[in-house]
Amino acid sequence: MKIAFIGLGNMGGGMAANLVKAGHEVRAFDLVETALDRARENGCETFGAVQEAVAGVDAVVSMLPNGAIVKNVYTADVIGHAPASALLLDCSTIDVATAREVAALAADAGHEMVDAPVSGGIAAANGGTLTFMVGGTDAAFERAKVVLEPMAKAVIHAGAIGAGQVAKMCNNMLLAIHMIGTCEALKLAEKNGLDMQMFYEISSKATGYNWSLNDYTPAPGIGATSPADNDYQGGFASALMLKDLRLAMAAAEASGANVALGKHAAEIYEAFNEAGGGGKDFGAIFTTL
Image (cartoon, rainbow, N blue to C red; front, side, top):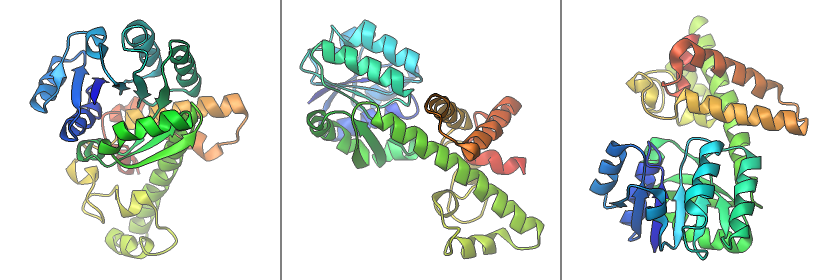
C-alpha cells in the first residue's frame, strides 16, 4: 500500500518506520529536516510539500501538534490533492469539534476518514505497540485496521467520528489523576517511614494496583523502569499531558460534566509547566512533592 505520512516528530517518526517494516511504501513529510533525514534512514521516501507526498496514495496518516494545524493541512494540502479514494487517518490528539469538522469536509470530497489518536509514548511508537482509539464508520474502520495494525498492539473501534478523541481525552485525564495519586502515595509512604520499594511491592499486588505504579513507576530506582530512571527524559512530556487535560476541561465545560479531580489534575500540571517542567516526563510530578 502507498501511504503518505504527515508529521514525523517523536511519535510519527517511529510510526512511519513501522509502516515501512510492514512492507508499505511510505511517502513522508515534515517541516523539520532532521526528521526527514531520520525518515529516509528508516526507508521512507521524503517530500518537500504535503501536496507532493499525498499524490497518488492509498492512505494518508497524520500525526500533528493541534487541531488548527490538522485543519489547515487537510483543507489546504490533502483534500483535493490526494485521490478521493484515499483513506484519511488523523492520529493527532485534537478537540472533538475539529475532528468532526475535518471529517465532514473530507466526506464532502469523497474521502472516508477516521480519527485515531493513540495511547503509548515514544517507546511504544518505536516498538509498534500503540493502542489506537478509532472513530469512524464500520467500513472506514475496517480499511483503517490494515494501516494501523503494524503500529499497534490494539486497534479499537470507539464509535462514530470524534469518538476516538473522546476516548483519548478521557483516558489521559484518568492517567493524569492516577499518576498524581501514585506520586503522592509513594511520597507519603516514605515520609512516614515505609521504604518506597516496600510500598511498591505491597500496593502493586493490592488494590492500589494501577498502570502508573506497576508499569511506569514515577520514583527513580523503584518498581518498573521508566523515564524516572533517566531524569524524567523521554516518555510522555508534561506539556503534552497538559494539552490533553485542557482538551478534557474544554469538553467538560461544553458538556456540563463534573470532573473535579480532572480539574485539579489540570491545575497541578499547569503549575508544573509554568515552573519549567513541560519538557520532562509527566511522572516528574513526583519531584514536586
